[in-house]
Image (tube, rainbow, N blue to C red; front, side):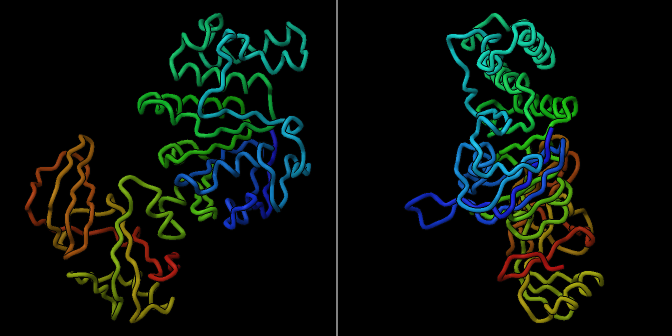
Length: 357
């Protein structure tokens, strides 16, 4: 187990005028599960590879347990990495794959056996140890890759989109297993994914990235309920937050074909922040709508999904999604009255797209 500190870390490849990672800063506590999330090309995997020592750090410093590892070789960092494509040796048995790093270290046979069996029991692989990787399912092979990391007893576990090759049901199952594994081992884990569901369910803290920059760091509830900007608000959550751009004046948001009278607290916030007479963006999550009398909502499409229903339609000319609990009887073409929870809405600057606080 270990602390990890990234201080002003940047990455720029030779010949590329754009940086792949810009001023990345975080203090990771001993035993913390950190998830880096963002769209493809945002710099999250590059950051992970710099921590692993697989990519050189252009500038900034990396510390593992207060030891400066910025220029330390990967083999000397005491980390273990689990890749997306398993990276197993096809000619070896599962036992041999899991034992490989310990064999290279020339550990005693009894020590290797003890550690492999312990990891196999944790991951439910005891019955598979004499098989070859080709005889296992994708989920089992990913367990082997995790087991190979466990036997090394590293200071830090790194995961680079380990579940992205699996089907949805298996991803859900292995997410639970990874969370239980973290609880059991108490190890520091850093996990990269583009799947915000994985981020929300696994992380102690989430690092949301976009275009090489960290947009927000916080707990799952913080980045979901209290986003710092429009990108985080739109990326975290399915369906994403609704955004209505309009002109704020005298307590009313004048948007495209609709006027929304805001609550006293929201008006006070916007006035104190100096937005009277200015353009703003009003954000409300689909589940924070409810049936009410404030707004007229024209239903254009209905998705009934059992536990909840998604109503796609318009407030005035603004496209909006409303999420209602249960199986709704609302039909396409209906106009219904809806309200929203004024305590849970967000407001953003129309130019910077940053949260108005």
